[in-house]
Amino acid sequence: MSFCSRRFNLYLLAAVFGFMVSGCAHLHSKDKDKPVGVLRVHIQSEAAAAGTTKSVSVLRSGPVVINVMTQPILSEADLTSARLLEAPGGCAVEVKFDEAGSWTLEQFTASNPGKHLVIFAQWTEKAEDGRWLAAPLIVRRVASGKLVFTPDASHEEMEKLVKGLNDFIKKNAESKMK
Image (cartoon, helix red, strand yellow):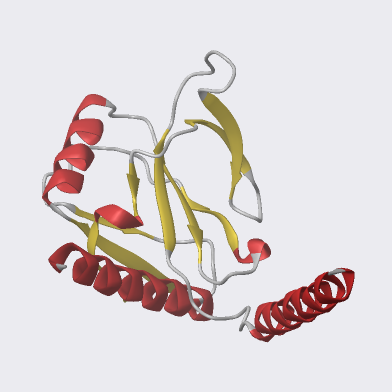
């Protein structure tokens, strides 16, 4: 009886070891520069109770500290399209929101003139490839469902972001169809 249990334990150990080796190899073979699309739009806020707001630094040269609500008002899940635009001195990113996202954008821009929309994005799986990119000032209600901003990022970084966002939008649309 103890002979069979030892053999079983050896087989179990070999299976676990094999799984760990293949799993670790898979983790190390991941392309860390693979485009991902993370976009979070936060609204500027007054400092409030702990946990509901946080201070973030926007812009790398001449950083500006802004208090924002910790929960984003919009995310990549609310998008229908993203594209890169040529702009004087660099590029701009245009994102279009779905119906619910458009309503949210309209509601927050109508009720918060003079405040900022603060935009966080991440374009690869590396944590350092994510940062606060822009803080456009709300000057009027945005009813079009489109948000255009000039990011504090390179053209290459924004190409990766737009590709990652469009890949996410496509996968999200496919999953909704199922």
